[in-house]
Structures are given as structure tokens and as C-alpha cells.
Image (cartoon, rainbow, N blue to C red):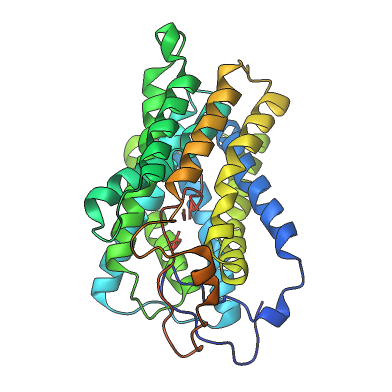
Amino acid sequence: MTTATPPRPGPIGSTSPLLPPGRRAIDWRVRFGLLSLVWGFSFLLIKVGTDGFAPFQVTFGRLFFGTVVLAVAIAVRRERLPRGLRTWGHLTVAALILNAVPFSLFSYAELSIPSTLAGICNATSPLWGMLLSLVALSEDRPTRRRVGGLGLGFIGVLTVLGAWQGFSGLDFGGTAMALLASLSYAVGWIYVRRTLADSSSSHLSLIGAQLFMATLQLAVVTPLFTDLPTSFPVVPLLAVVALGVLGTGLALLIQYGLVAEVGPTTGQMVTYFVPVIATAAGVAVLDEPLHWNTPVGAVIVLVGAALTQSRGGTRGGGSRTARKSRPKPEPTQSPSPAPTNSAAAPTPTPAPITADQP
């Protein structure tokens, strides 16, 4: 994953490549499918991990192993870590909002709710993102389509939760934490867009530094709220390792490669496959119950989320044709930041993150 003289990547959110185009050995569609599977199964891995470890321990484990993967990638590419106290200060806040908080909330949420519901709650991140961007980002202007998508998306949430039944059988605490985790991704993206979009450091070094700061945060918090494990059950331990290595470290590397190769719009579409895979995995592997309102509501949520990401008719968004016709910047230039209202990544990305990575 390196070359003799690679072009310097642009700022967070840009579409500059992490890898030179000629070195992509695996077709982007295969990597897209792999990323969907990895992030879709992440909710199952969280559920299995919390069977043997405390939620904070699961979060610390995934951050630690994810950081190790990115540290190896940084060393192989001989990247320099970001410089400047201000940049590291912003990365510390981003690590808290985009990694430490949502990861921990999802781990605690899955103590009391199915992984299927957690996966669907994760898909609401674009809805929160659009709602917040209307207030926080002056360049974002609502259109009827996007506002309609926002309303439709939250109708889907109510459908998933069974509002007409008085939310019977619903664990409010766990569901609220999963929705707050999704909201945290949206808040984090706006923060990153305002503070780190013009950073001269590479994507890889920024996300590596961010995960490192999140790992330090959990290293401080975890001993305060949990006791050292008295045993290390094999299956939950393997789940935590896989969650970190695959669902965090490797997934972020794949995501950035996709965004660089096919653009942020296609790269963000992984968001709409994650809840489908999370639901299928929870039902098939964990034998979680599935009622008709869950898949129906999930489809409504995803349609609404897709509409909120539509930029047609929005000031500054431009048409699809116009965007395609824009010349690509030279490697020495800093490309414009890509749209960041994404749920998988999540992943800036120095994450959604993150697409919002789960």
C-alpha cells in the first residue's frame, strides 16, 4: 500500500487518493461490499463483545486494535503525524465526539437492545446531520426534497420503534443511547468540517492521530468505571479484536480508498447497506426477533436519509453533470472538502468516520 513518490493527500473530506490509482488491485465494488459487510457485522461483534466484557472495555479494545492497524499503515507509508497544538486540540475533540462517545454509547445500548435496532439507529445519522447543518452550516440551504426526507426519516424511526403500540416492549434507555450515538456522529462531522477541513496533514495521519487520542481517552475512563477482567472468554475477546482490526482500522482504510477512487457520494452509499446487513446478521446469527415494522421502518429511514443527502437545487450543490465536468485539481493543490453529512464513518472521515462507522 505504498509507492515511491505518492501524491500528497489533501485535507480532511477531500477526494485526493490515499493510494495511486494504478495500485488498486481489488475492484472498488468488491471493496464496497466488504466495507458494507464489515460495518454491518460490527453491531453483532459489539453484542458478542459485551457478553464477556464491560462496554467501556469493548470500546477501548476496538480503539486500541484499530489504532494499531492505522499505526502500521502510517509506518509503511512513512507518513508524518499532524503538527501543531491547535490541530491536536481539534483532533482530541473530534476523537471524543466521533469515536469515544458514540462507540461507548453503542456498547452500552446493546446491553439492552438488539443489534438489529442499534444498526437501524445508526442509519439516522444523516437525518441528524441535515437537521443540525441547517442551523450550524450557513452554506447548507433546505430544499423541499431534503426537508421531506427529514420528515420521512423520522416517521421511519417511529415505525421501527412501534409508536402506534405505545412503544410496547421498547427499552427506552438503550434506544436513546443508540440514537444519541448517531447524533454524536452528526455533531462530530460539523465540528470537523469547521475546524479541520483545511488541514495540510494527510487523511491517514489525521485519522490515525484521532483514533490514538480516542484510545487515550478510553484508557483514562475505563479503569474509573470498570474493574479489570478476571477472565478473557475466547469468543467475546475475538469479537473485540475483530471489531478493532476489521470494523475500525481496516474499514477506515477501505473507506478512504473508496472515496478517493469513486467519490464521496458513492462512498457514502455504504450507509444504506449497513442496517440491512446488521439486521440480517442479528437475526441469522444471534436469533434476534424480527417484527414487520423493523424492516419496513428501516426502509423508510433509509429513503428519508437518501433524500436528505440530495443536493439538487441546493445553493452551492450544483447539478450532477456540473460536478462531473469540474476539472480535477493538481496533486499539489488542496481539493475542496467533500460533503460530510454521512452516517458510516462512522468514519473524518477523519472518521464517518464515521460514512459513519458504527
